[in-house]
Image (cartoon, rainbow, N blue to C red; front, side):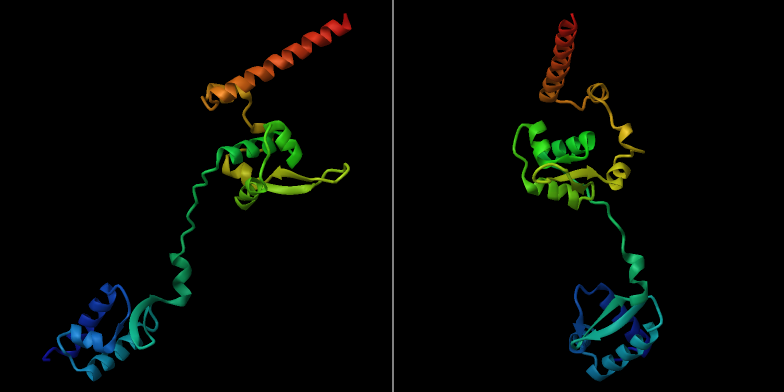
Length: 203
């Protein structure tokens, strides 16, 4: 092969940069047109020395060569990607109950929802960092009680729980589906009936 050493260096750099996986000296020599294995190995060692102080290193692992990021620069390539958390209907309901009624026990959550709540639903919310164990209720059995976290407020752009929207705001924003509307209406009707009964009692 009549290529000058500089051309071999450039050819090896280009080949390894584009390679999908590490390559052996023999594979590189063949790729360059049956270059001498000894010559390719010598040039690889020169390149490794050249890149030793740079942001990428040329390294040999198990007889195969590849470029890799310098260890002290690895942190520059890590990007924190916000994971889109898609909650199930059950998890959304539980999160709303905890937010509006905290601190609240699992039994109280089930009483409000009207259905049994699996432990996995609360686990998902705690893993997301939005719900935490807030202690135990000082009643027989001492059930665990749950509350929201500062991360919950940050994620939803709330300064405090006082900023949580009310039913009227949710309805105006179109965030209540027909079932929620029915429940809200029932709750308002029940509250109104209770007020009427209280007035009659006073009479």
